[in-house]
Length: 217
Image 1 (spheres, rainbow, N blue to C red):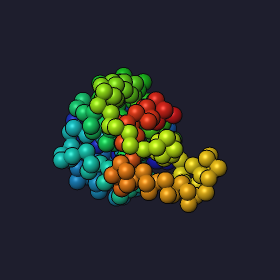
Image 2 (image 1 turned 180 degrees about the vertical axis):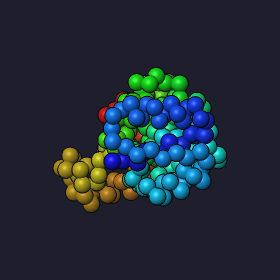
Image 3 (image 1 turned 60 degrees about the vertical axis):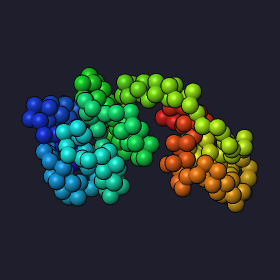
């Protein structure tokens, strides 16, 4: 049996979440949080829970607070639903952790049930509206892509890194030593002026080395 934390301070919508979750027929235990303090407390008590959160209704100062909370409780999964999710907020959630499912609060019940079932399997779900939002944003930014200062080999390695492959996996794919791949990695980070894979992935997306459809496979 898994704990479900429903974090929503509006009675009607909280009741709606509870109804939909119970309708799934899955063996669960529901906890409710109506403030950020209650949410943080429940995450501490049930660190492997699934949190269903209306982000706009809680007093988070910035979306990064959710990233910090998820990093503190890495076994926690999240469904973030809101009427007010900007493209920047969505990108921050999706590119910094694989634990966030994202959908708009006015999405159909089928979208929520899909997100819920995926999250129960510890997999994330991204609604078609959110996917289209990011695709459109990427198209608009393509005219402002940064000048690519990487060699062809470095671009290929950066793409594999951004798609989640480890140094060992990239070395095996390229029939190269791990030392060689590590050297390329250091050169890539130096050239594009980043310090970690998250930042490198953002660069790869902006530079057009990978697209959203490829990233979510």
